[in-house]
Image (tube, rainbow over all chains, first blue to last red; front, side, top):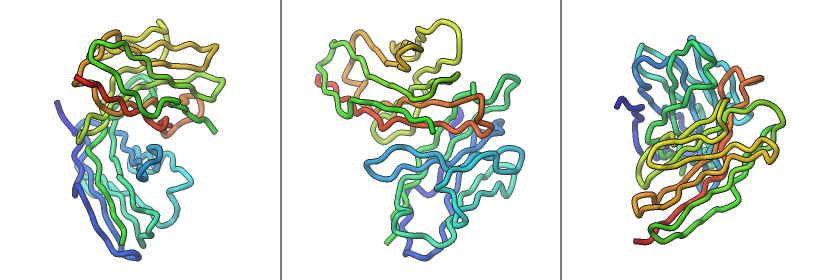
Amino acid sequence: EPEVTQTPSHQVTQMGQEVILRCVPISNHLYFYWYRQILGQKVEFLVSFYNNEISEKSEIFDDQFSVERPDGSNFTLKIRSTKLEDSAMYFCASSPPVRAPASNQPQHFGDGTRLSIL
Amino acid sequence: AQSVSQHNHHVILSEAASLELGCNYSYGGTVNLFWYVQYPGQHLQLLLKYFSGDPLVKGIKGFEAEFIKSKFSFNLRKPSVQWSDTAEYFCAVILPSNNAGNMLTFGGGTRLMVKP
């Protein structure tokens, strides 16, 4: 079964540094998402992306965050100047193209990248 | 804003016991409902989903869930758990009417430990 893959599995970065988290969604999927889970807290939505633009973003997704689909396979999350509170597990997800509403389609998740800010 | 509550944070059962995990959401309109499972060291996997129709939904691995609109609930059940069901279980909601971005709102998760 095709999977969403994320790299790296663990990223350690100094506060204030830029970090890029990478994701390869399932190849025929068109909707892409980032979520994060701070240790001991809920999984939280960050952003969704479709047709080369952001379709929705949460309050967490401020100007420090950006997403990009630089080629036909990768989907990246960039944090421009990391803060201690950005330490979390970051999950990428994708969902397929559909005739029905996209909200009816399950999102397929990657294994996550654990981001640790020092 | 919508929210999802899972009241059981930790559940410990013996093998063959029956399971019911609670999930409640706070939104009065149409919702799409999901249960995801995360086995130790693995990614979130879809167990089952509900959009419309029969409120009793059957998923993989013998799991089922019942949508009760009047109670704003979508509880997950399994008649007889196995040691391999040890995992964290997440209930999640999408509001299709105003959600162009398909944002999933998750509950806090329930850690299930099944003793052999």
